[in-house]
Length: 116
Image (cartoon, rainbow, N blue to C red; front, side, top):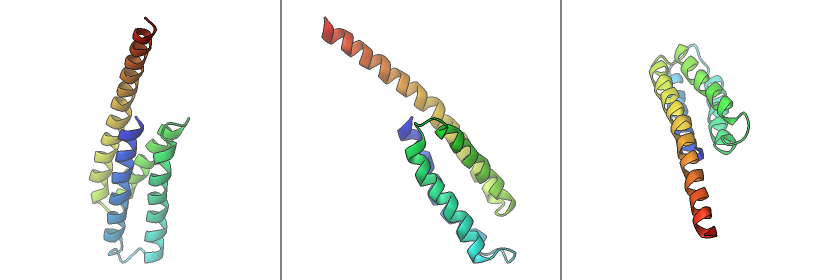
């Protein structure tokens, strides 16, 4: 699960940076506000890569997905991009857990075969 979720989060890191570039063109937003918010979100993406397998890591990832979708109120394209990444996040968590379960079963079979 860690690999899939971390890949999604690194992709989001870049998307948040690009969204910051787009948001800078909004005359209602100051550059310092845009880059403070984007910087915090980008930092959260990187930190979550290490926290994914810890308790609450997936929940924090979902909170980040909600924040990305909510960013659509400032950069309308983020509604679409945020929903796409929320779908990727779901797939990463769902299929990542299945891969982890399969690895555990394979390891258990290998241990049983070695014991015989």
